[in-house]
Length: 213
Image 1 (cartoon, one colour):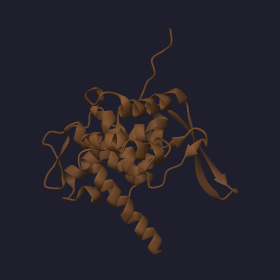
Image 2 (cartoon, rainbow, N blue to C red):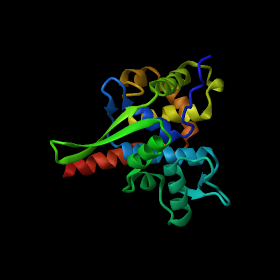
Image 3 (cartoon, one colour):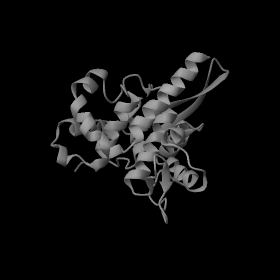
Image 4 (cartoon, one colour):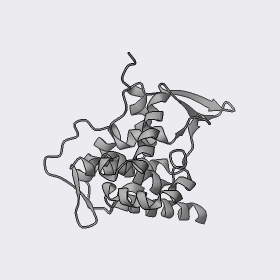
């Protein structure tokens, strides 16, 4: 009998794996730190660990980090201890979100990370999937969310699609698919709360800052 795949359960981990392009064997999305922080916010929101408090995320009393990935757990603590910030501000804060998620996936044995230097000078890391079927399963859940009866779509999958759309993550949804399924994606978006809109604004702000330089 074929063994059951160990698919990640948190949104930052799922989005990191979906950002990986298996054909090019590398991550192919810009603004990955922003996308993963947005995913962590949605993870906390959907688990009832934070709430929307007048356009600001606020930690729920007694919220515990049990079962969270390292990024989501760290972000929960920052929200609990820090001052009030808008959703966009939390997404856009300087961080090493991609590295935190990457290292967590590597520690769990989901990916392999090889440190090396380009031209013998510039450090970089080569990421490979240990079990490509896991990414295929995640991609299948995205496809299913676009075609299954709306009531049958798990809230986590609906939120995943909303984040992929907001991030314009072509490795998981092409622009043609995003256009074709626009109405369906808009119906799935409420599962991610106010985060997709804030993510778009954070990406636009970062792009504008980069263009100004």
